[in-house]
Image (cartoon, rainbow, N blue to C red; front, side, top):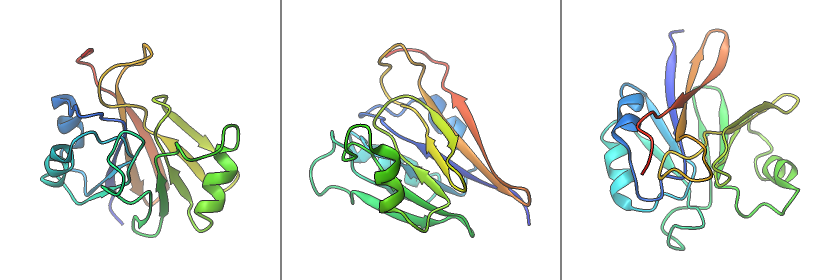
Length: 161
């Protein structure tokens, strides 16, 4: 089996950086974990690869589904923005929402997170849009190959806006 690259992005808030497009070039699929901010972003991402998108708290109600499940070639990913998770209960809420998933993708916090949760991976690509909270803009490239899935955090170096 050859390697497959999946782009994972979140919290663009209406800004799709050229560095994000460059980082996502050549991926076979893209997951956007909400707070899109503009349908133009999904259209631009869709020119690179098929996109699975969920809505976040800045997206118009009903614009996108609130959760999605996607099969990434044997690895089932559950996707939610995460803003509906009760405070302090994020991990149990996500796990209950996606009981079959080996990978759970979420956004909302603007802080990248890749953690092993005892048989499944919790992945937040951080925020790729306007820089906030002094955190650099980021996304994740998930490389799926014979050895399993390996998330690679990509820092988008252009800096503000």
